[in-house]
Amino acid sequence: MKIPSYKRCADSPIQQFVPPNRVRVPIDKMAPIIKQGDHIEAGMLIARTDSDARWQFRRHSPLTGEVVAIEEKPNNGNEYQEIIIEGNAPTTARPNKHNVSNSFSSDDIVSAAREAGIVGMGGGMFPTYAKLSPNVPIDCVIINASECEPYMTCDHRVLLEHRDEVESGLELAKQAVGAKRGEIANDKHGYPFGYENFIIRNLLGREVPSGGLPKDVGVVVINVQTAQTLHHAVYGQQPLTQRVVTVDGDAVSKPGNYLIPIGTEIGYVLEQCATDLESTALLLGGGPMMGKPVDLDSPVTPGMGAILALTATQIQKANDGPCVRCGECLEACPLGLPAGLLSEQPDESVLECIECGICQYACVGSRPLLDKLREAKAQIRKAKAGSV
Ligand code: SF4
Ligand code: SF4
Image (tube, rainbow, N blue to C red; front, side, top):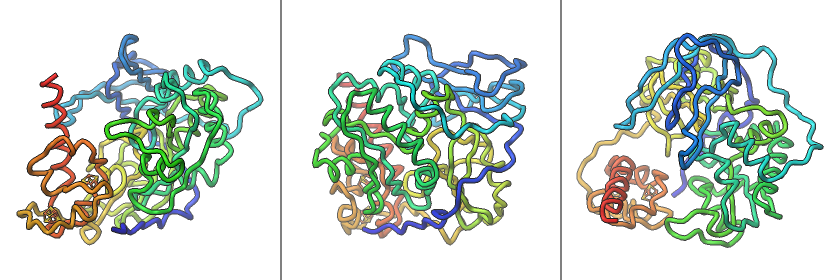
């Protein structure tokens, strides 16, 4: 099934708007190391995981100013916090180029990635330092530049405008894992063939085992902006405090690719992009296939590649009618999964689902299959954990 790409921002150069005077920096899985009333500088560490946590996360302030509050936020039962900072973004822009003649050890690169708080900017938000210290032999690092989700063009622009920085990040990642081969993969087969397991199959002919990871077949895959951020962390000691986001949808009058501080409220972004909120029927963080509904006060996160303000005519309404067993979802699924059946009677095969949403797009009854599959996966995982 061919999903329309709607890449109308592909020719829009990366822009910046007036930075916000307030950000709400999300600190999921971390604890704040600052308190209300503290003065902080842009780039300063403001939250981190305990030193004995299995995965280490760090977050840094995008603004110089004051911590005005630390708020608890509900998130489907998983509470997290937001650090609200009022102040100003640095007046000096991040230098684009650094002196790249230095040489670094694998440990230097892994530690720079960890301390800069770099996470997968393709959406996964898994800590990059952990990917770069896989403890198994890796012979190839792939930068996934496929960006196959409809509308999203932020990585395309970063690669076009800052290819040298992305290539430098690729070299650093290769050095970190000891890989000889590095590739920038730009699969053009459309959605969902930019998914990393498909990229590995098409590029290297290797099959990531069900439930496995790319490292199981000797590969590390990182996103374009993750690689760029790694370059800035290693050569410029700069933490992850900003990212390029595609802002689009028919309700947006100034769509484009914008460099935005992490924690900027989506309402502020939409205001800067002249968005008609009255005609916005669905607000998404991420692309239309895998993105999640967000509010005006939701923050931009490191993994948020798009903000879409879609009008009623752009969205397919879910109606949760009965399944008519037409088989369209099975036909459309790139993994051959019977989505309709699995959403009602899940078994372990649902764990293979990559949550691409194509089955929902194909469903003749417009059933909300993706939510049901996500629930089914959570149920099966819980049952498996309980039986161990
Ligand atoms: S079942 Fe999962 S992998 Fe298959 S189309 Fe649906 S969301 Fe995608
Ligand atoms: S496409 Fe929809 S209606 Fe058809 S079998 Fe799948 S879930 Fe049922």
